[in-house]
Image 1 (cartoon, rainbow, N blue to C red):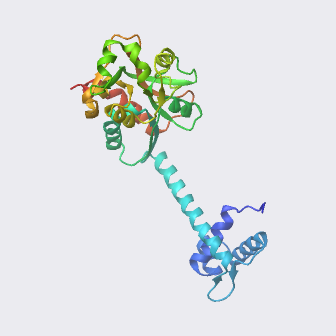
Image 2 (tube, one colour; image 1 turned 90 degrees about the vertical axis):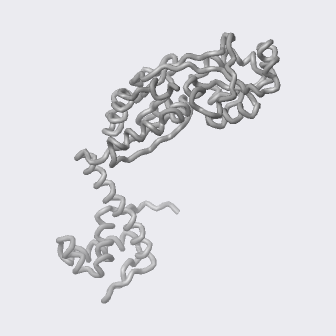
Image 3 (cartoon, rainbow, N blue to C red; image 1 turned 45 degrees about the vertical axis):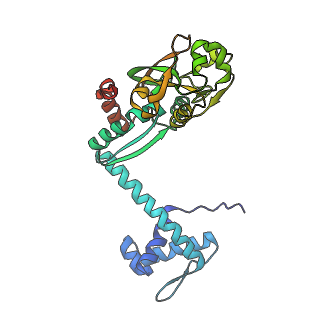
Length: 305
């Protein structure tokens, strides 16, 4: 059934006040209006909804429709209070909001420390953090569904994005040293690659697109696995190979038994990491604070063993 009727917030407020106070006169006193104004508002609401909401009497009683409307009114009034409180806090600098997406390697290497620093400096914070491939982060920032992205830059970043460069990294092609084909791979890499799957975060991910274009004919199979931890675990179980940031190789225990494949034209991918957000977007206080924290964060020192 298509319903064209809509409820006004003031109507819902009057109805809830009558329910909360137990009568029309007490509701009028609380709302600083006349009792007739409250009675008229409820009558208009019942006429709009074409149903009786309140059984008049002492005490008043809600009908089944009235009980359903009260449940809705409780939610609406609570949300209104929360929104107004949040806006007041943000305006006064009491609370900040941060909505950010990080790539898997950024999250694994720096996520805990960066967010800890942010929360220490902004204890009353509202925080939403997603982890996803960099291609999806860039798409989200461009679509304005994400305020701030943190990951590797594309070779040519979209012109609609502002960027903040933070550090540079090299991504290495690796395989487990226990892989049964390792000896043959080291002796004749190009001849063995057809037998070993390559796992990437996304087949169209700008992080690895240059390598993918070269490797489509080199590897027999290329698998798309967005989760970094899963890719690393699969390599450790001799299932395939993947590209891993040097910092991750140094710090992640799962990588202890990985071998870097050197000497191939596609052995390394050089990347620049940083923050990005949509141009001309007014950043939240939380986003500005996080950018400041990242710019003073010693990325090289934090990952050097």
